[in-house]
Image 1 (cartoon, rainbow, N blue to C red):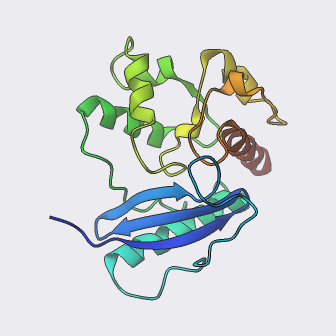
Image 2 (cartoon, helix red, strand yellow):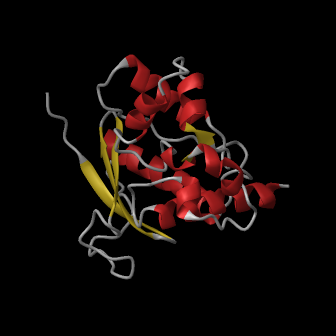
Length: 198
């Protein structure tokens, strides 16, 4: 059965995102800049705004998502007590291994990086790094399911540098926004959050 979806455009320091929710939870986070968008980072979508005061479940999920993203992007996510929960997520109907990979990503901490091999091992199939990579790119909830934390084996140390400056080949590819530039920004932002908390 088709579920009615509601959307809101959300501005971040690195560009706009389109947030999509239905009554079950968040269905998608779509980049509105970069290689998969008609907008560039400097353009503004016409529909930027807050989720309405509508009382639908989808609107509740959009408001919860905005609250979590506000704390993530303003750097206060780790400092806020009690912790701000993520909204419910609607993940694609895929294999149990894919769901295990996504759960592993969801349990990773802010600033933590994992290699594809680590991810496969923690998800129950240590020799399935390639399949773990396929799982990482097969959901539509970037940032909420933190696929940006998955790096190449050679990039794990580089991704943790305090300045966040890593060569793109060290941290691996990223399909969202401006690709590896966006991934690098997210990794550096998370390192800054950790330092701010200390």
